[in-house]
Image 1: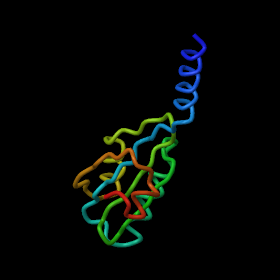
Image 2 (image 1 turned 60 degrees about the horizontal axis):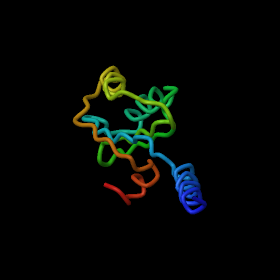
Image 3 (image 1 turned 90 degrees about the vertical axis):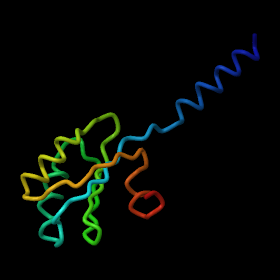
Length: 108
């Protein structure tokens, strides 16, 4: 019985130490070619309460949006902000990797 208790305690300890990833969206933005273009989109997405961090890659015309722990952000909200700024969303992919990993090129 002591062994069972020890195994359960260790298992619960490991689960409590795990960090559950929040989604990071990679959004391909059609027509975003200058820093002024990106600035408007960045300002509006950063203003969302769900946004933890954001990164703009002008060369390849995409943005990364990381969501705060425990919150959700709909792809429709992201699309609307970009469309209202005058640009088109070519595609959105979702990753469980943190923004910093994606930004550094570790995850593509």
